[in-house]
Image (cartoon, rainbow, N blue to C red; front, side, top):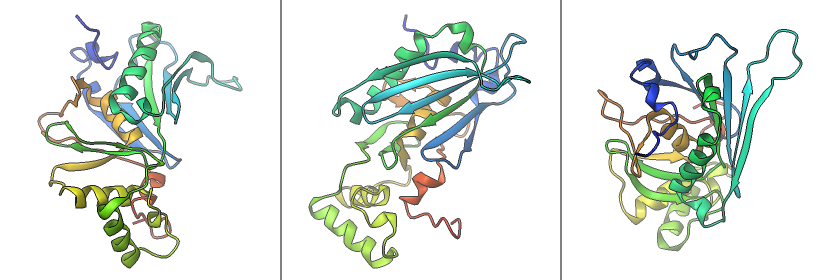
Length: 243
């Protein structure tokens, strides 16, 4: 029988609040924070935090213990990394698979003390998820993917008509250009959601996976995603007006 994913899923029957993770957007590039509500671990020991960094050539994780009074730096409990090729790195299931391997090699007693998770991904690496089923509708278009062809040209023409000169969305590799080109290639539905790499992995940690699909939380029946200002900038976010 396969091990549960994420690693703390087996504890959910004892800690029902762990099923609901609060997404806190950290205003740094590519970060999304998740914090379990009301769960501090089974032992009266310092909680630990998990950092996940998804890069262009692989993923690395680091688990640190909460800084104690009098300490100058937090204690590193565990570090590990995995590499992938450019082709593999453009597949969402590879991100999850390699992260699974790293976490399963970690001492499970350390994971029992997990209090917070931070996920960092490459900016403007996006995919489209069906928020009602959790299915992947459009595979990842990575940070360096530039829209092309008829749909890409139409997307850029539309953007140039409305976006300020010099704005990040004017780039063919911007998240907004990818989103618009996807819609022009084949219309997206009202349950389609553009999801950044970090947000997708965060959702997998929060809700789990069934095969290749994100689990849809109940009773809402819809997946919700949060992101940060840096990712949103390449979707047209105005950093001056904060809208």
